[in-house]
Length: 466
Image 1: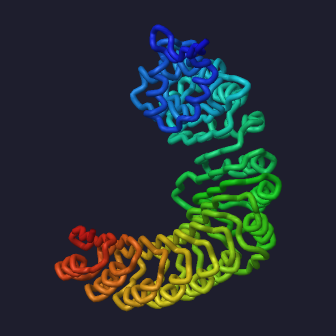
Image 2: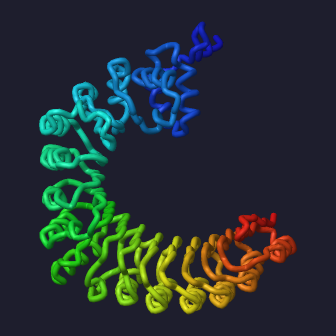
Image 3: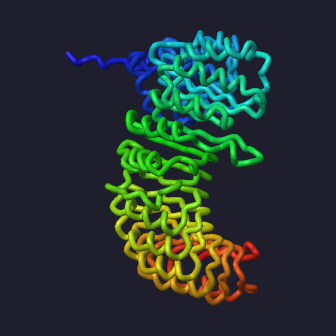
């Protein structure tokens, strides 16, 4: 007797698959448009989609589908969409709430498998936050894993004080991004020292003077303890100063910072690093992304830092806005072949022509793919040295030399060299000193290379070779 073939579709043309399988397959569709096309195929039978049906329902009212998948971002939580968001708490491990001030509605979205990211950056709903202390106390009872808080107006610091006081009652909090006044940094760092945070971003609010943004020895010790006790992944500080912290305490901080094996990204913006020139790196730096913008690093600091860069894990290094001068650039160049650095940003570092000569020797032996030397008073002499060095480089694909002093002679050398390499290259020479670019256009057109060379001149003209 012949076997009967199993029916895969019912009379309505709906696939006869187990609802659990249909829902599980959906969770493995990462691309937003394809995901909702998949839901569209099953939405007429809500049972097949389970809680995902509510996500399809939200997509009919939400113009930006990227806010719904693969992450759920809620910009307006109301009684009309509350049921759908409640259902989503069983689908997503994290829900991102933006400018949501109704704690009562948020409490209805709590589930045992989902945490919240809360972003509060406006002052439009101040009337909802009264009384302030009570509102933040209620907020602390939510399963908040990430909190981003910035207020344009908090003259008496009531909000930030209430927030900091409530943080010890947030056991799920692992990521914190705050913009706060100097007077609140010490209480905040006391909390950080014993917290479970692994991701921290602290920005000082702008002041008319710099006197109020200094970190105290106690504050630095709190950061040191945190770095030693938690598997910190990301640290970003902006606008703080430690000039008055003793060298011994800074040495302890540097040891905890530079030897931290879990730290993935370190970003310091306008944060001077006193006594770094006297610090000895005992081992290579483990951080992958290292951004030290405007940290007042001089040649001696760069020489010390180069010790830690040797055989380090750093793949992105941004030293923009530091007066490294030739000596600092030379120290960096000497260690560059022994690093994994792929992105190197040296804008406004006083590199000059001599610095270019040092880099020209190191670059062919390095892993650098993207190099930014903009605003460094580089003339055609430095450009020519770079061209000679880069002729041997097999990795560099982007070179930015904006706002230097390169004449048509240096520009021609760079175009000729980079355009003839077997590496697709982007060259940015905007705002340099030559007057006519027709010869450069013709040179680009005549190059035998089949790869693209993009040239941006003073007149914003683009020349490309296909």
